[in-house]
Length: 157
Image (cartoon, rainbow, N blue to C red; front, side):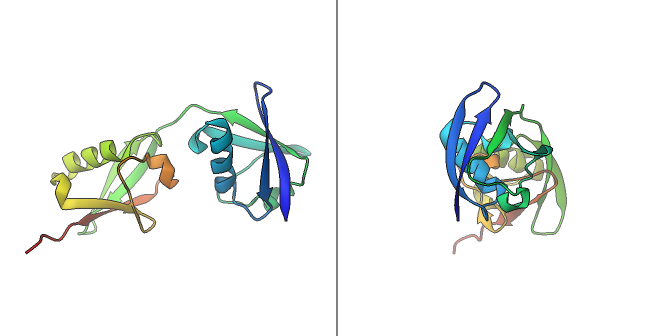
């Protein structure tokens, strides 16, 4: 069932979004980003359910009993560094501190340096999807303490 939810920024600016109650908060944030230009990893959302309740990424909008006409508050937070892990083909894990706004090419460069491997000899994936140039780490919903996998490319012959 479609809902019309208003999103209010602290500046007073309002946006109306059509959503479904089964939509995840992460998908809702992506929709908000399309309208406001505020990246999902800088969004902190809250709804008034008696008291203000923060909307968590892993949950669904239905978990907060949102209904048409409700207003969700959008606070823009400063980007904070997060710790993530990279696991190589031998099962060894390395720790990296990154920002969600870090570009994939820059992150690959750090991995290349720390793992001592040539750029053309590896590729990275998260949740089964390759990390592609032209994207930011936050585009993949990379969260604190998640694991990115380093895969070696097979040499042609």
